[in-house]
Image (cartoon, rainbow, N blue to C red; front, side):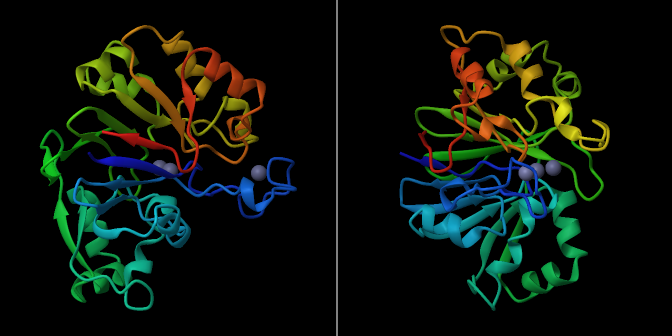
Length: 283
Ligand SMILES: [Zn+2]
Ligand SMILES: [Zn+2]
Ligand SMILES: [Zn+2]
């Protein structure tokens, strides 16, 4: 049975965030470090498929018991999701013909970025484009489907992914701009309807900011992500038959990083969860 491991729960900057001298990042011990979001997916043959290539690749692979890697899948080009790509090259992992799945827009950015293009020329990666609404198999028991979502697209577009195993389906949605736009784009009336239309059992969703107050001087337009308070308002209390919703991609300022915060308790009291580094989901 395929098993998904959450290898990081932080937003692109990680926790602690470089340069942050506020209480959120002061006095953090090694046990408080959170890597940028990525998923390790082990198929039924014990082959590893990595979603996102972060700079914490070494720690994330060891957290996942260093499986043999067969593919890498990328959602979009924002730095925390791709800044580990170079680690697959000759200087480090020295990968050969590793399948690299991404959208045509992301692959064209790779082809036009000299250090990444060189790795493709050297045979590190074997790029393969993924088109929305077209599922592809990673193994006999595991298929993946790209879902386009609106997210600021300076460098590439953004795709969430649905992983379907024999028992359950999981949505990986680390980033998007606004629920209004995402739901309208997919013609869904509510988060519940959208997840039900895709037959999702577990949804790992963008929980970057608890509320818009955390942006301190930066506007919602500059760094758009739906605040968790809005997601909770839209979801309300979890009901019988609802999927599991797990908040991930937490900014360093997000009180959900602390399991004992009132905000974390609010999420769990409504029946939803906060992602924990190392948690697993069997599909
Ligand atoms: Zn991100
Ligand atoms: Zn901080
Ligand atoms: Zn992003």
